[in-house]
Length: 424
Image (cartoon, rainbow, N blue to C red; front, top):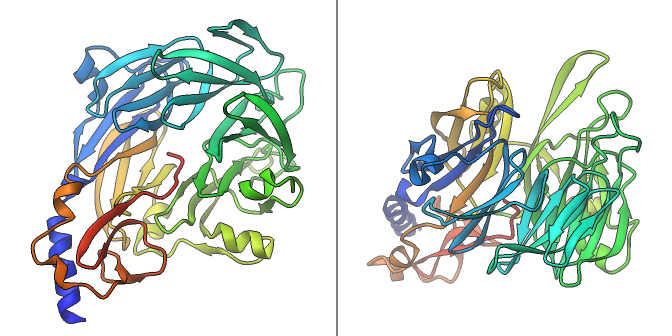
């Protein structure tokens, strides 16, 4: 075992921080047109205005989601600029789709990009479509045109793709100023036909923000109404929903999951904030959620406090936690602190075992993350001498045997990369 661990340490030294390539969206200040894109590599901030330096123009006002469409294309939803900006992984702008105003969140199957929007009109190749509520638009990434759009609930937010179906969380977030109530539903659409095929009523209002995905499971945050309805979290089983079990396909947890992400082992990590206008105070939850256990036990089991190295005390020391992310390729952990929301924030980086590796100045309201694939994956899979470790088991980079390998792991002396299903 000592020789195996020594080999693993050698492999770990071969996987340098250069394999950590991260894009962070800084939202800036709403309506100030000061969003920025940060590029992080090799344990350092390369640039806090990467997009502008690459292209000679700004990313726009309030970028609020970023996804990898395919190995050659990235999509960014720029909410208040009313564009979906496309670029290559090296930061070079390709084009911007301008027909989806007030766009929110993204997902993709590699051929099409699906976008939620709060707006009531969308220009498509089939003509102008008008809606009473919000909608989901479908962009063809060969022409970068909107080929279809479908009405869902009021102010739809998170969106995920599973088995050819789109799962869309509706918020009703404008209920305080428009003539409708908060939403409690998740709409299910056939991604090909763009028809709504079913609706799940979670009985929890305001399903707001980015949803995380782990295989068939979704983690959906609800901030409540800040008065009578407290923040909560919905864990949803997409398979159960597609089988028609619309009442038993989800579990409500009495924990906030304001910022959540998928870990390399398939669990969710969540920082949750609860705010009450009655007390004018925030309270926080810091949890790791095992969705399979949660669904089996109806929320009685499968939830534990974040217990990875110094991650929890570091998170608790932040002024305003604003995002959390686990690199699906390596397991490195990241989180951001927005501070006072009007000046530069900070990016924290931890190793997979929770060792704090550094804190880095970024820009205003750093919120959204995308890890790029390791640049030298093919080279590190066949490191000289690695074939001596050939017991057939999978190990992580700390020498721990894995039952469900994911991220970067070693099997039979070879370093492998396996990306879990994740909603970036």
